[in-house]
Length: 317
Image (cartoon, rainbow, N blue to C red; front, side):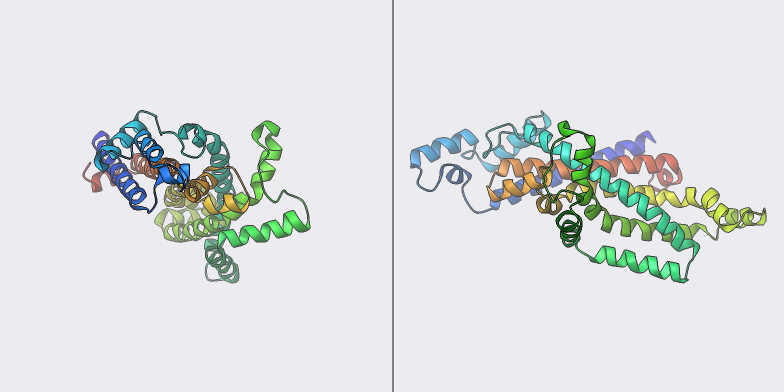
C-alpha cells in the first residue's frame, strides 16, 4: 500500500508540474501587455518600463516561471493587477461561496441520482427504466446555463420565491445564503445527477446477477430487499469514484453559473480577471482548480485501493 501511494503521489506531482507549465505558457503567449493594460495606452514609456520591472515582466521566461511556481509553493500567489491585493485573499473570499455551492450541488445530484438509478435497474427494460433513462439523457443534453435561466424565469421572476442573483453573505444567516445558492445548485446538479443515475443503473445491473444476489433471493428476500441489502453496497463502489470526481468538476465548472446568478465566487473571479487581463489572478485560480481535480483523483485512488486490494496487485504495488 505504501509503494502504491508513493507511486500515485509521484504521478500527482508530475501532473501538477505539467499542468502549471501549460497554464503558464498559455498565459504568456496571449497578446497584449499587462503593464499597458494597467496604466492605459497613453502611459509614458518610462512608466511602463518601471511597472514591467516591478511585475517581473523584464525577466527571461524560464526565470519568471520558476519565481511564479516557487512562490506559489511558499503560499505567495502574487498580487492582483486589478485589485492591488494578494491573490490568495481574493481566492479565500470567493471560495466561501464556490465551495458550499459545489457541495450543495453534489448533495442534490446524489439524492436525486441514486434512487433514480436504483429504480431504473429494478425495472430494467420496462417503462420506468425507459422514462428515467430518457430524462437523464435530456439532463445531459440540456446546457446548464440555459436551464439556469429557466429557473430564474420561473422561480425568481414569475413566482418570486428565490432571488434572481447575488449573494447576501454568510453573515446574513445560513438560510438566506442557502436560499441564494439553491437555484444555482440545481442548475449545476442536473447534468451531474443525470450522469450519476446512468452509472448507478449500469453498476447495479452488473451485480444483480451475481451468485450472492441469487442466494439472497433463494433465502426468501424479495427483489427490493435484495437490491438494498446486498446489491446497493457493491454497486456503490464505482459510484463513489464518480462522486469524488464530480465534486472537483463542480468546483471548477461554476464559471458560467456564477456569472448567470452574479455570485461572487471563483468562477466569476476568473471571468472578471480574464476580461481585465489580470493574468496573475487567472493563473493562480486555474492552477488551484486543476490542483483540486488532481488531488481529489489521488485521494480516490488511495481510497479505492484500500477498499479493493486487487487494484494494488494489478498496478504492481
